[in-house]
Image (tube, rainbow, N blue to C red; front, side):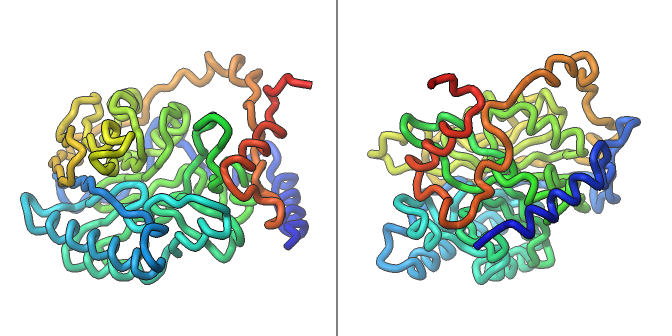
Length: 365
């Protein structure tokens, strides 16, 4: 399938808006868009659990049924134990787990959002009167052949309120491989042409505060951008994460944050990196934490109304740093995965070859 017509559309949009933005992304006076709060204090609950990979089941359908049943049980526990939640955060892949192998095999271990699973979770959200947030491998007919890493937010009405694409993947992930999932960065022009600039760093303005969700780790500027857009609560889903990263990012950007991590089997080489889910304040202080690698649910109540009083976005030193940033060249260019289906890398090893080929920092002859 050729992307030529879409690329022409993208070029036309780029030429017509050169030097301008179609939407106001950041207010010039430090304020940011909000909707009225329904109440002063909200309760965040974070679930950490061990998820089985869909590839480990006899069929994908059996795996999804098992993992959905587990999410259902944990959601019901979160709704009936402790304070009533306003947000329930799950990890990066509670429905699909991880997948291995070639692209065709990995695509089988994905879901659609919305889809049957989000419909079932939507019923739980309505019953509990809460937002449910989770990450997943996903597929989309608008992006044939692409494996997406999405974070879904299901509203109190049971409908998908927002789908947050992953901004970018970590680079040099492991020797000999790179993550082959599709992100905003690696299909940037096409993404903006389809969804608009506001969806680069989208903010869901809810009656409980402005929220966003991301799987990105150790990427300071990504979270700076979310904060500039008016995020008040930054939900995060990641694996093998850094506690310091979560605390420092919240403190530097003056927002609340919550991280849900998966558990690993006790005999796994990654067991020491499992669990540790936490909720932190805008000062980077830990409000709740489960330091174990065990299944659990943590909670924290935050005074979102008090936090919002007189709040402005952080005063970043954009102008003084501009000369340096203008001369900086990213190692990997945008759009490096916007290729025909038959040219998409089949696995992490092929993705590594693609990244080496397009790298601007690769000085080898």
